[in-house]
Image (cartoon, rainbow, N blue to C red; front, top):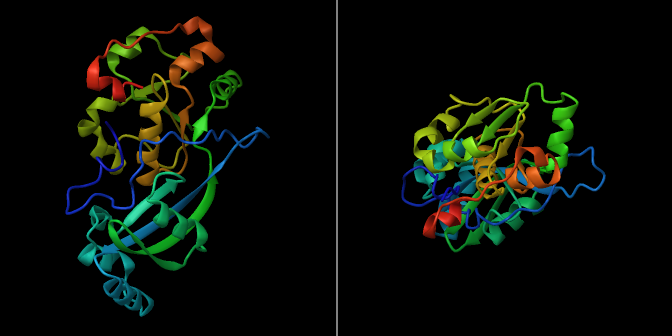
Length: 259
C-alpha cells in the first residue's frame, strides 16, 4: 500500500512526523464553488533528534546563521535528512497531532520545536496555504466540457487491466499503476515523468489510491494536485454514466489498496 511513510527514502527512521497517511481527507473542491470545504496545508522542514537539549542546540546553530538543510542532512534521525529535512506540503490529518499543531499555529518563516513519540523536532515552517485536495466528478466533467484543461496533466494510478475496462475520454491520461510505485516513484521525485509546476489530476477506482498518490506528489514538490473524489466509479455515477462501471476482482489483502 502506497503511503508517504512507505515511500520515504531508506534510513534510520521514516519521515517521522507522518503517522496517518492513509486517512480519508476532507472534501475540498475548486475555489470557484462557494460550497467548497478547503483544508489548510503547511510546507515545512524539520530536524529530528533524541533530546530537547540537542533540539535547542540545533536551534541556536540555525539562528546563528548555519544552514538548516545542512544541519538536517548531518544530524537528523529522519529519512527526510536526504532532502535537507524537507517535508514538502502536507495536509491536516497527515502528521502526528503535536507536530501538526505546532506547524499550523506558527507563522511562516518561524522556527518551532515540539516533542512527539518519534523524538524532538526542530521545525522550519516555510509556508501555509488553503489547498484543494479533491475534485468532484461534476467539476472534472465541467472543466473538460468547456475545454478548461490546458496546461493540466492527468494521471491514472489504476492497473492497465482496470483501464481497459473503463476510462474517462477527452484527455490524455498518464498511467502510473499504484502497485508499480517502485518503478516510477523515483522518477516522480526527480521530475522525469511529470511537471511539478502543472496542475495535476489523479484518479483511481474509488479515490483511495489517487488520494495517497496526490499527497505523495505534494510532498515531493508538486504545486497543485487534486484527486478525483470517489474515483472513476463516482464519475460514472455522477457525471457520465455512459462510460460504465466495473468491479475489481482482487481478493484478500490486495483489497485494502484496490480503491
